[in-house]
Image 1 (cartoon, rainbow, N blue to C red):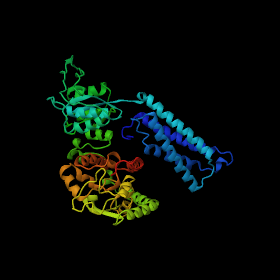
Image 2: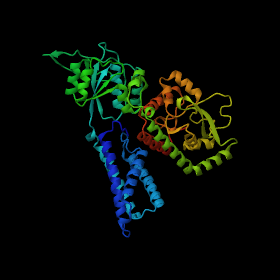
Image 3: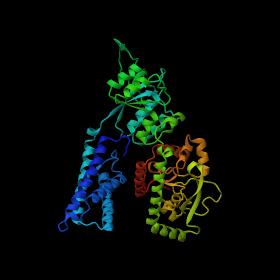
Image 4: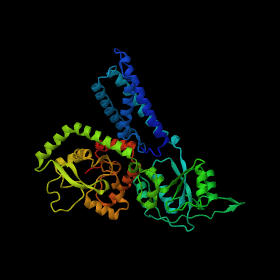
Length: 504
């Protein structure tokens, strides 16, 4: 679920789930043939239901409605309700809350399930009613326009591409440039088909009685959008105010000095002004490397974790609490894992490896051993691969279930890692990435994490291209780190563990 620019229907669906969860809690607490409802904990049970059910919905991916269908929704919704009911049952049993009956909880949960499924089915068949498309005008080059249009067609963002005001009089062929290619790849992966060849053919803008005319350019091969000619103040204001423009996106290599006054007036009239990297990151929830430069990093907003000391202290406190609770809760699993590792193969239970931490300081990462002792007997560092022959039978199970990561909570207690942050890499790989991947060193200004934004959005990487793609998510986290984003990452991590994706 994209919280930066969510579809209106998704917001209504999430709000409806909160209301229905609260109603289910009230019904379950007051439906009891014997015990009076006064003996219940009304505020506590409402908070419990409102926290548990939407969280499990999010973990089961029930707010990503782009692939919505009856069977998928039904199965995932059923799984979310089973898990939620179990969690609530354990909680009520542990705290011995009175006033609940099995019949009351059963009826309220069943009604909640039917209403949730009905709401999602209604959304599926009436999605167009919730689409509030907002026009986007680009000030930039044709290749940026092609990238922007590909991105919008590949996502469920509530925007549509209005057209482009060119920054150059020379018309360029639209090719798979370094800017367009990664965004077109996103679109293709989502099921789109974009053949970006040919040149955008543009009619000369004619003027009649001093008024500008903005005709639609003929359809280009692969892409079609309005070309409104060279950018100037008069044309910009006419387009923004008369063509349903909600957001103006400016390419990072364009100087806005001559349009600054017009952009200021439009902003104070309610039109959003954004740079191309900002707009892409808010929709894709990553920072495309091809849109970034040193100047953007110098003036971009965000990066609060780097500047706000209180935020770092709160995050550190949460890390300590989570690590203590996590080590205690997972102690039986850890003892079982240690036993089966020792039984299967000789050698130590724990595996220690040098990794690069905050400000590029090396530290020893602790994991349960999942490979043979002679995995790198020749001294050559290697990425783990699919069906890696160095991984033991037990180690493969531990990796699939992410149990091998449990000892890293010791690194968290030692202050070497955080629960959430960019994953630490080995020094030999970091040196390679720093020379071949732009801005790679920026990820080391935050403590590394057991899980991270890249880990929950991108599968395990074993090549330089994967490192570039994952860095885009890491930089997004460096810029937007917050307690809310950390919570989203932890919930998505539960989803990754549940569906066993992202590990090797």
